Image (cartoon, rainbow, N blue to C red; front, side, top):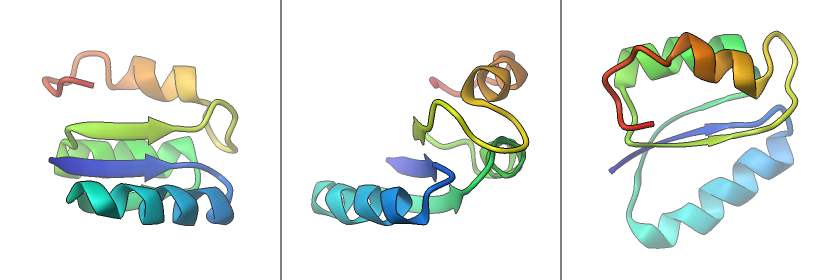
Length: 74
């Protein structure tokens, strides 16, 4: 399964990356803000997305609304 990690904290992104490695997930990208997250989401259509509550550029709810019409199971 394809994983996208979205968090403005590099420490948290790395911790999630390390923790998820034992589940054999295919890490397709990491984003530090909502705008980049949407770009990666549209490009790779991940199966799983970890999404921070508050981020610069665009918060989690706005990012989710923008991907609402996407065919992914997010």
